[in-house]
Image (cartoon, rainbow, N blue to C red; front, side, top):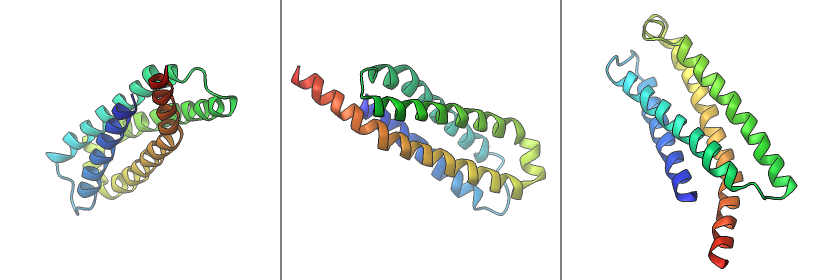
Length: 139
């Protein structure tokens, strides 16, 4: 599970890096941008799904402090998902073309938040999953 989560986080970072490259351009790339947005959406969906249906249930017996951190993380993940959906809904292909500078700003902000959340997930979940793996190996 830990390796899978690290892989999903890597996919998300890679897709966001590809977006950053596109956002640095003076004009939108009508061919590459939809593909990168799709990569981010898929990676984000896999991340949420893995954490909600795989990682969180596996960590059902953690300490109260860790349980609180997981609960807070779950709330952050849900809020991030709403922000991402709103962003996608707002920034249609036409809206991107009409306001490239606005899309660049909004996307950079959202990407920064997504990366921050992935780092927070890593800081909280990686050690807990590592402990779980160690405990399973000892059993």
